[in-house]
Image (cartoon, rainbow, N blue to C red; front, side):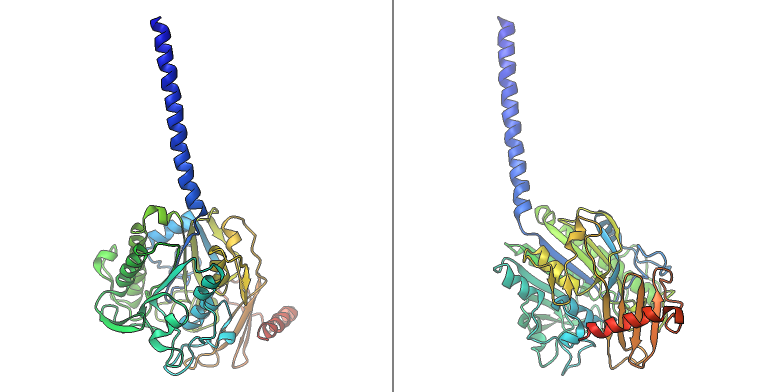
Amino acid sequence: MLSKKVNFTFCLLSIFLIISSCKKNETIDSSTSTIENTPPNILLIIGDDIGIDPFNGFANFGVQKAKTPTLDRLAKEGLLFTQVYANPLCSPSRATILSGQYGFRTGVVRLPTPTSGGIKLTTTSIQQFIEQNTSNKYTDAVIGKWHLSDNTNGGSSNPNKMGVDYFAGFMGGEVTDYYKWQKVINGQTTSSTNYTTTDFTDESINWIKQQTKPWFLWLAHNAAHFPYQAPPSNLISSPVGNTNLSKYLASIEAMDSEINRLLQNIPKTQLDNTIIIFLGDNGTPEAVAQSPFTKDTSKGSLFEGGIRVPMIVSGKGVNRKGVDASLINTTDLFATIADIAGTNTTSYQDSKSFKALFTTANSFNRDFTYGEIDHSMNPDTKNGNTIRDKQYKYIKTKSGAEYLFDLTKDESEQKNLAQDSQFKTIKDNLALKLIAVQK
């Protein structure tokens, strides 16, 4: 009889545990389902003047690498894209991301002056596009460097006129001092003595805390742009040397530290539902560029040192890991971000979504990538246009010089094939394609 009571009690206990287990699993599944069905937050981080030579993952370029444990971790957890092409200067690259269009369409092919060269107010921004095509599902902000305004397109109110819900940062191409600068918040200017990288991180953390619906944050650091200054000691692992390169690399490390702080301050449920994109806006400047790049092949030029940039994508929905060598243009960020936001858009203007690469290799095909620069501060030997396919790259400068490189064999562009008769057909075909793109 005692045995039967024990068995009966054991059975009841077993049933209770099974029911409890089921309820617990149902709770977990429900929570997971909620996260899966919630539109992802989008965090776009732009590093200023960061080409491939100071960045880990590009062993053939540069000797001294910045210490970036946070970005290294994100790359390990997601994808490092190694064939991403921007334009040679800040504003043209940022305009391609904002508009999904090449610069000759938006008019942003150089750095704006106070009276001209800014983004046209008739241009549809990525923020406006997402709002219009998701029934205002997202809230958005741009924090940090803008560099797309002039006095004819709204001046310090230009970001808001372009559809940005919240802007906090600075308007021009650089601050004169990372520790003393003019800060603009939604068109109103104040003075700040906060280290810019820290200030932008504080702004980002505070803004995210206030959001109650999916968000798109464009965080545009001015690190590691000139002036080259030592960051606060708590953001770097060792004292900074006196050279420009030492200060430049240290400012990248400080940015990496603050990216880590930002991610740590996003609640886990939000972070689990966030996709993170990091990229540089153009190549490394001449003053701090490393071999094989020179003053003629670094920032401001159409060579690899001027337009090829690192990009990392990690987080929600990025199921692949490793290195991806797909050919990507910065215009493609527009369609990709719009695609992530649920606009059902895979192409727009000059932009193509590479979102499929997050889950499936070889699922994105761009036949060519295009770049341009026509800056008044450049000699015409640097101004011009470039186009590359999966093997060859063609450059035509404003002064008439031509360059052709086989990037599969000559990644650092040491041998110009433009005058080699064996490659005449290849050069001519790329030259014709370059003309066709500009029509």
